[in-house]
Image (cartoon, rainbow, N blue to C red; front, side, top):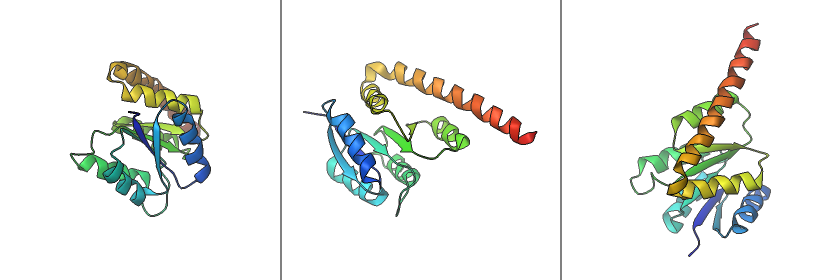
Length: 152
């Protein structure tokens, strides 16, 4: 049986792209257009992983993540934030909170699929941790440069 992924985004083109990238790798993809629908789909579909936009109507992705984390039944579902938010500090905070990954739009569908595969394979936990550490290191360097320039 195929692993199930929930793709959550209010932009239909992004949902189609996520779905195409992941179904090509053999995953079953279910979709939601906002955070409230996402929580309903989680209860109904029990996905193995969630790819979720941050900025959405009715309920944003951060609130979805908070509610999932507060529920013992859903707290261990891996989550990848996929967002156009360009705020480097925000990305860094998200990655340092743990429990989620963060890819920015536009994204490389192959990179997304690789993250999904790694996050669903317990034997690749070290790989995911290494990718996160590299991403955090790059973001720290960029935010330090940005803050230095703002202080000048």
